[in-house]
Image 1 (tube, rainbow, N blue to C red):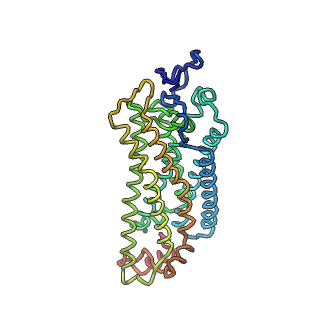
Image 2 (image 1 turned 120 degrees about the horizontal axis):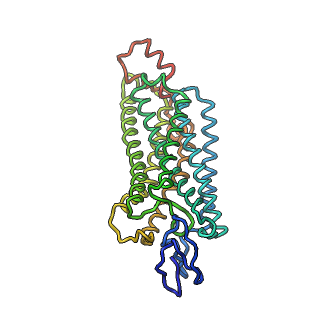
Image 3 (image 1 turned 45 degrees about the horizontal axis):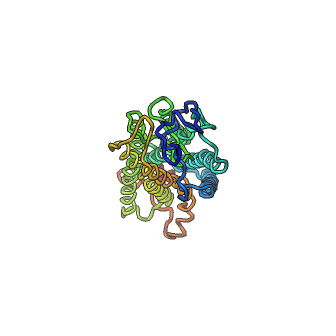
Length: 371
């Protein structure tokens, strides 16, 4: 959208008037609303300092968490705990790379104020940015659901699962999550929806237009994320209830294992952060693409209020990448023992199955599958 003699022109972004000369057609990532110039005297909604500090804090937090987890992974001897730490490492790597990739582009824009229409006429950078936003947004949610499923089966089906726990299996699940998220993020490149430049022209994301393709991709992205959060909530709730039953078993009250508490506290923390950060954005996308609006699909006009809300909810969602690593840093066994000194290694999941023979009890007590 341009201002010509103080008024907005009525042209679509595919054709732009610049100093009275008809410009060449632009890529599909440019929308009418994105051509709007800043209102005089209006305080900018984004800034170089905010983006830079946000990226540095997030990268530093994830890097610190990576070393903490790597150290814990070398020290642990439990296969189940090693598997859980691999999921956490996958989550840290995902958050770190997400902040690094998107942060470089956003900070570069604020430093140089490059013109997207001139610099990225074919929308290659914008498509890469949008793909990264979707990929690095879905991965933490799906990894959180995978960890919840791993803990659920580890607690409720420990003996049938014990032989299958391995580092290769855990890394395989992480790779499957990454692959699925990448394939889903490719849909706009293949024609199902599209990535477009978003207000205030510093980032790209999926399009909240009312045409069928963009509606479909918006729903696929948001409903996949909502499903992952809900699945995590259900599985974690069942796991916590099961552990509470174990802790109140009179026969096993003297046999507690603090690693069970550590893993579940970390998992609950991850779930709460993901829910608070991502659900507002995901629900907003669903509501926006489903409601009937007077949006010009041809020119890609979206109300400014919608653009502003999308940016606000996206900012809230990106806090997930900063807060996640502090779950691993703060909710470690050493920290938990300082907060709750009576937390000792005494409880075993074996107490859930009192009918097992003495030999089986000794076997699985030596290597608890949820340690």
